[in-house]
Structures are given as C-alpha cells and as structure tokens.
Length: 159
Image (tube, rainbow, N blue to C red):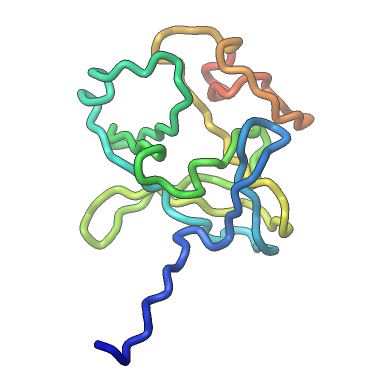
C-alpha cells in the first residue's frame, strides 16, 4: 500500500460556489461559464417519508426540504451539498428535474435552463404549496425580477 497515491476528493457540485447572496442568506454561484442544460449536481440529504415529515416539528426554522413527486422528502441540511443554497427567483436560470437512477431510486438533479456566466447566482422557482392554507404574504419573494410574483408560492397558489 505504500506506493499508492491518496485518492483526491472531488466535489459533487464542481460548478457551484456557495457565498453571500443579494437575495437571501447564502446563495449558489456558477464557478465557470455554463451552457443551457448543464448538470449542476444532485440534491442530496437524508430522506423522509410523508409520515416522518408529518411527525416532526419544524417550527418555522430554516429548512432545506424538497419533496419529490413520490412524496419522499429530501432534507438537504442533513448530508446535503451546495445545491441546497439555490435561492428562489420568479424568473429562474436553473431547474430541478426528477429522474430515476439505475437502482430505481427517484433522484433530483439541478441543471441550468439558459447559459449562465461565471459568478452568476443560480436560481430555481421554488413553486411552493401552502399545505396549511397560509397566504402568499407568509412566503415573500425578494428576487427583484421584472416578473416577480411577490411570493415563493407556485403561480396557481399565488392567485
């Protein structure tokens, strides 16, 4: 074993740098110019069932929860990566796409929607749903885009 080189750790999100955001808290920024449809990384973290999520008390704390179409929820705060810092914008430059891996597990990947320049902040449209019937004002948006809805709720919920 003495002749082996140590294995270099590679980032699971090599095109993302986390830093202070002008929109909210920390944000994710492109480390280089990227074309449209560029893969940014998988949303990683602890997975919860619907029942496990319902049994927990979140108390309006900052969360990194992303619920998939199969109703599993990924908590990016537990074992996540830089993708958890993509902030919301009503006119996003990135999107979240679900796909199954070889093992049949539903995965969530982030990719660019349009070309982005190195240093640009990366955004997705959160399109939140208010399960508790709360109003759009409880989910304010500060993206500043000309098409800003004023809320992070999905367009259907914001009406």
